[in-house]
Figure (cartoon, rainbow, N blue to C red):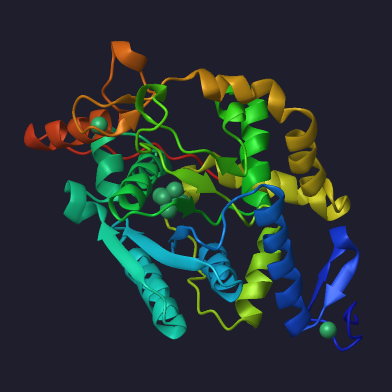
Length: 330
Ligand code: SF4
Ligand SMILES: [Zn+2]
Ligand SMILES: [Zn+2]
């Protein structure tokens, strides 16, 4: 297997591009794919302050590395979820990466900010861990970006992540979610009042042109010491299941993931876009954060409801229930 560019020994092949690359040309190729996505979807410019959600995994650290290499002003944000040794090791990976690149990393923890960890939240509410985790991450990422004055929140969702989400949304015909399935989610203001500061920060996904095994190869070649182990709470995560299913199809038909996602963006996404634009963002009457949860009739955000439930159950001495878990099929 030879590099498509220099004909030296290739370290990875990318079948959907019918190409293979040596280490240095793989780095160039992936950086070009990210630069192309940033330009194609008008994600941000070099004057914008970017906050990168850095989990310590391959995708977020590879993306952070690429943005720095492309000359962007990118700060990392690590949110500790309190998932035992997994959280300490992933935090260390994010901190070590920031130190190695001389980049700034902001660290917050759910326990310090809200008094619970992800496993505790799951036990107290009886919901699958990923549900509470996702809700808390979305809330905290947005809060941190606005409080710290960033223009854009950047996440490491790769092509596999987006295809798995799309697959799940189509399986269940989640029309609202299909309306939000885009590489860029524009900032939103309260009540739709133009001219007021954003309540929901602009969110972008520059890795949408990069598959999971490509970002892993990038991280290895770039010498990024990311956390390899999976989150121990992943078992109930249906997204993981969809990813495995799509990967099976991709193996026998390379290019399926790309076709499904970019075909959706080109041919179908506009049919659902109004669903997103019609929802009015109001301030949560409890925390002031933006919410579209119940609309003006019930303006308490889902985050506050979940947090209140967890603290109420703990105060009442309710014995934590085991979170619902689903077996992963193999
Ligand atoms: S697998 Fe679930 S619990 Fe673990 S970090 Fe991801 S969303 Fe959170
Ligand atoms: Zn080469
Ligand atoms: Zn709230």
